[in-house]
Length: 247
Ligand code: OAD
Image 1 (cartoon, protein in one colour):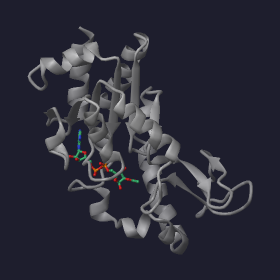
Image 2 (cartoon, protein in one colour; image 1 turned 135 degrees about the vertical axis):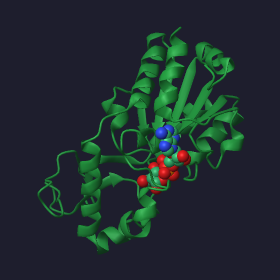
Image 3 (cartoon, protein in one colour; image 1 turned 180 degrees about the vertical axis):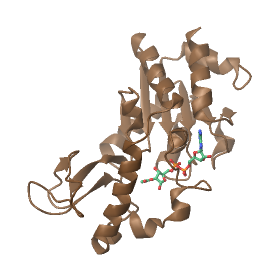
Image 4 (cartoon, rainbow, N blue to C red; image 1 turned 30 degrees about the horizontal axis):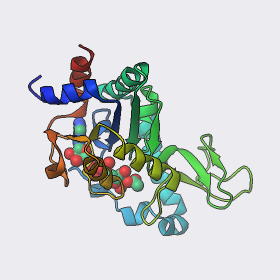
């Protein structure tokens, strides 16, 4: 147990509510590239060209090509030990009649694939598409079409993810803040803490006296805030934490 404190395990054993925020780092060990690391997507591609509505309208084919490439990559990878430990953690608390909420910035569906249930997807889900006109939402778009279209109204479908300049779902965001403010232990895992409003969640948790913990091999932009920093990979540490918790 040299990687984290006994205090953390005691807090987790006594917690009535645990909230976890994840970012791209939890999926790194599954082979999904993060955004801002050395090999991250934003070091190879420009968000201005790919992740906003203007570019989509101007370069629809290019944007879809990029998203189809990412969807394909994600469809071919599996959840890692970190994802599974988080779904086990949910089961641990719900079996005791306690609360566990997973808030994710990831659009990759790997938390769901690993069995997590109570998930708040802040930035949408890349496996879902929606119509730019009538908002029809589907997980079954026609992959053969260069630009997939809506079966209801014929307009373009777009990936159902939050792009730069767009707002997050108010309902999901309100729930995320509520769960951050009402938990006893809050984890921030695998995120650079550079993208807002997600990066405000640990601040709110701390302001309401939660014990806040960061898991990240690198120190994030908000590392100084945390009660405990675990500078290791989530796929290594989360199973260790679960093992101690179950003892
Ligand atoms: P980033 O790419 O900004 O940060 C990934 C973080 O994961 C970094 O701090 C890494 O050090 C850390 N990391 C890498 N490997 C890890 C591992 N094995 N275990 C734990 N941590 C690891 O990704 P996010 O913070 O998720 O938005 O980025 C936030 C948002 O920016 C994304 O949701 C995306 C992007 O633009 C949208 O698509 C709307």
